[in-house]
Length: 117
Image (tube, rainbow, N blue to C red; front, side, top):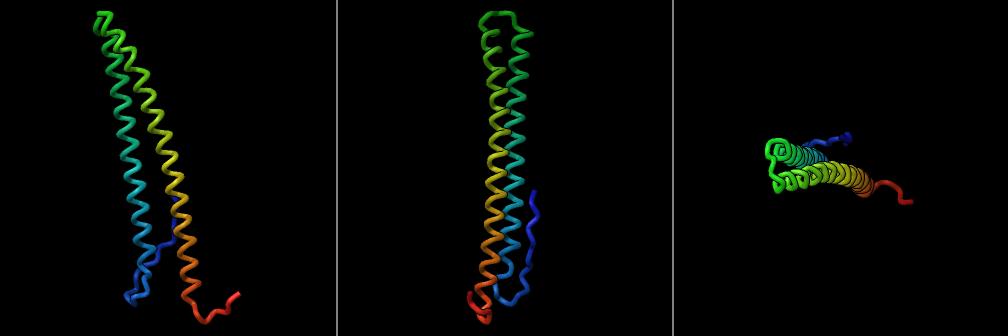
């Protein structure tokens, strides 16, 4: 997780609390991403185990075919969940860098006494 400098609202009405609100939103998004990844992995593991159980315990051909079909679906779901988590994590990191850039632009534009370049 990236560390973003946090500014707390000092009550002067300048909107200094925006950075804290954005930081908390990014942390909530990371936590939601972790929950989603764990859900993908839990479901994938359940499918693989269900497939293995069906293959080993039931000897009818029909069930063996279904069991062998469920195993690769579970593996594919696990891979999909990990790839999706990595992709979304990169997007979140990119968004947090943009937020940091925008905040610095706002602080510079609020300084009316500074000479313009």
